[in-house]
Image (cartoon, rainbow, N blue to C red; front, side):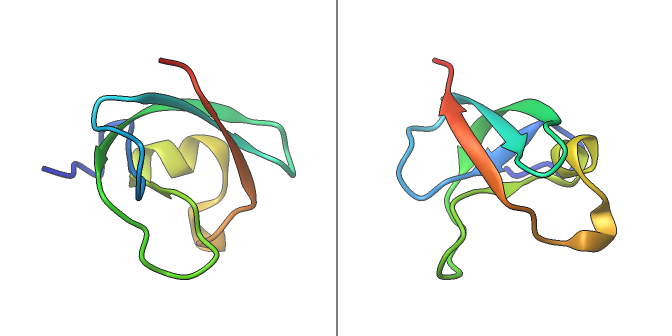
Length: 73
């Protein structure tokens, strides 16, 4: 179950349980999340972060960030 207060994320193809480092390309802030859901289903988006994870790398009011992801294992 997707928990907005946990450091989790949704990805279309990565296996559940995969740990991923997500970095905001504008400010360099990073967060490590665990994939536990599928998505996003909007063209051009590569990952959906929980509210807690998103707020640790960017302003919640921005809604969408340019990020890079790195699988940690």
